[in-house]
Length: 391
Image 1: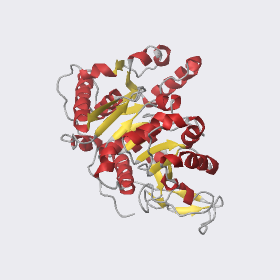
Image 2: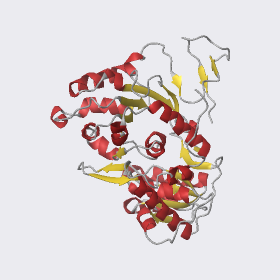
Image 3: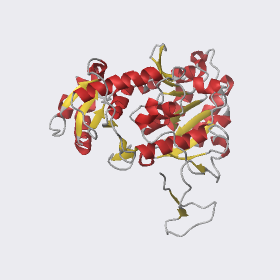
Image 4: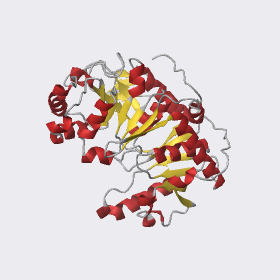
């Protein structure tokens, strides 16, 4: 891949470029499937209000701010507001199971202490549960509700931001080890977004207008970087729904894709298996998936049988096997490490590479080496380790 040309040096610079962006934005779909649209111009203005409110409360450049919020415009307000105010946000997962709150509180205290969070921004219904989760965190100065950041606070004061300083902190998934806080600099983030944009290749203005559908949690890098930040960087419209909405009624995901004629939507592998198993024919009445040309599949091991079940199950509603697109990434890399970029997302499809050796194009710099466990370079078609070095 040739040298990257970034659209700016820092995330606040990218956000300020959206001042006149009224065509594209963030759309939120409720569980009843009613939608609310915020042009990116409004997203920016709300973030500036939040930044002003945070500055009025004493937030200083470099302060760490934890966010525990559901998928909503308030998540955007808080995340982007912290960044415009010069702070460093870290989106954390909310409590899911009331029966395991003690375990959640213990992990939350560890995460807050690990990043030295001075502020925690949440919402009313979550705040009621968090009491024990913030006790004893010495760095924590104040717990705020996101809705309060839209009132008062005076005027936002721009802050000089160093591109090599963290844009945000991203906790790793904890799949193999205890979650760790990864520092993603502004340069890291914008380089990764540029790489994804070069692979994205929307095919016409209608695809930019209808863009992407995302039900992924925004505290996860696949939702945060791959949807929220990329949507504003491109820019293009992204339609959001909460992960709880998808899990309760997965058909809403496919109906939303059909309703807005969206071209791209990412999900972990289990989501495709869940759809094949749970969605009833009557829930698919009037659905057309023929515009969905990039069903990004990542974050988990991909099972060929599960892919086949999904593609066969939804072929009658226009889903094309070539739309299934494998992706691989790490929080430590910003997000994306490997995608098939030859024809853009959705160019070849997962069915072309499962079960056999295939060439994949890296979205960062090419692997610096491909080595087996013995640290000796190997030819193609043999298993080895891929080592990446990215901006």
